[in-house]
Length: 150
Image (tube, rainbow, N blue to C red):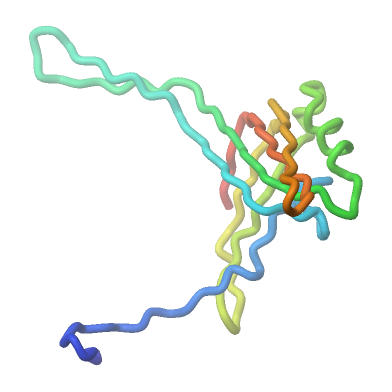
């Protein structure tokens, strides 16, 4: 292992590039949809209880729930309203899915698995524009029922 000018050991790890990562969402993650960022959160409710007269602690698992936040720029395609119509209708939630394909690598892209959110429904949308750039930004908040990994 090499030492730098401050006498610190510096070891170089394998480089990664996430250029091959894809978000597969009908009407949202398609090419030219200008998706800027997404956050997926999945949690389970855990209740912790203690027993009187002992040192035991108990954990009770409750229901799971998930949220997705997505930010897009409204661009050349007019599919944002079609997305909100499909994913905003709670009656469609059984067929509404989002998948992130996790891939990384510099020269040899390696499949790192995928995450699929099922039962997705849009909870809210908001739009903003700033006078200096006149770019229309869209923020979408969604709920989902299940997150699967493979």
